[in-house]
Image 1 (cartoon, rainbow, N blue to C red):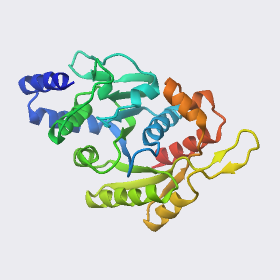
Image 2: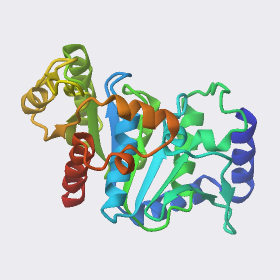
Image 3: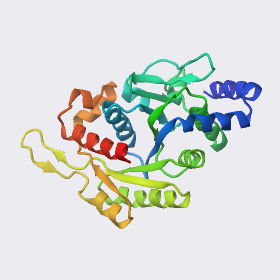
Image 4: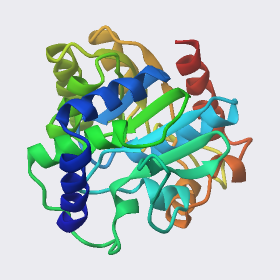
Length: 279
């Protein structure tokens, strides 16, 4: 994997110096109306599935959407979208993102790797360079929304996004349980420190409806996300119910929303997508 990055970086030094890349980043961002980074304070809250399903919900409403996977050590976006193969380059030597449908395209470091199970062992400067290339060296075109799936926590990747995309807003994902909410508060404070606006908070895995008796079970508690949003003075975007079929679809690379369009989960994502498009 390092060889792939080194070859890209070597070509960049010959034909695209640092100033040219910065110019390309500015030009690319100028063609994107709204930018959002999907964050979580900790792992295991369904952040990537939330980013993927938000992208699908936005695309279903006719928006031109780009999904940028900057979870460099654990890239799952291609598998959830059913992508396979290696990215191609266009005549301008820009990477062509994988296309889910006519309205949604995505890019991930996994789509640059021959060995999908290879470990990526990179330090901060290399991550910074790759994320900038994902912005300026990719043929995104005109987009209504760019969603950026970041790894959990407040490390190099979200910091690079905050520095590179000044008008990006944060969508923070949590579960209702207190241990998750404690980490979310750290994510909100991170955004305040780097002067990134928090667009809102999503409570994922919020209640499970038994398919047999229709009783609602609060597997991870209830109401914590909305309470935290109120306490931290950020918008609460909504709750995503827990549905085991979401796991099945994610593992199979099948769109949950296309397979279960009338479900409570699909309706919740559609509602949040409306809020994103409304700004």
